[in-house]
Image (cartoon, rainbow, N blue to C red; front, side, top):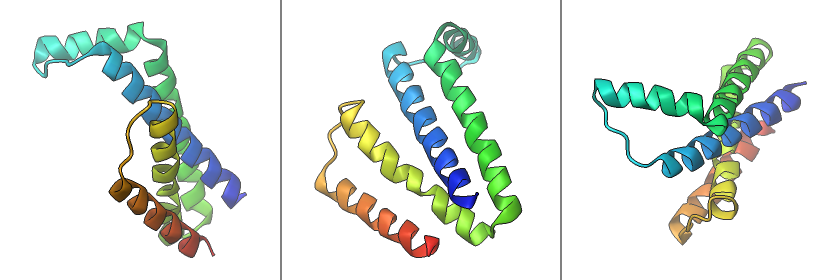
Length: 119
């Protein structure tokens, strides 16, 4: 059950972040003032992928809550870092971002840490 929750949490987190990034890049820069906040709320309501991203965030949150009920926090938090690995891959192949060698090496180091904690 713990690995199911980890996979669900990591997948939902990565999906949420990729969907948010995609939609917010399409929307362009938003101002931070009161009008900007209202426009941001309207933008969220009008864009289905942002609503889906919010749903993915909820799945991630509840998966994490279920995981920490049964597993030590010292396992759950580092295991959640596996989302960085999936997000980097999705950024490269779905969002077509350029991933330089430093970022790739950092991702490999994170992956090694996740594997060490998961044992």
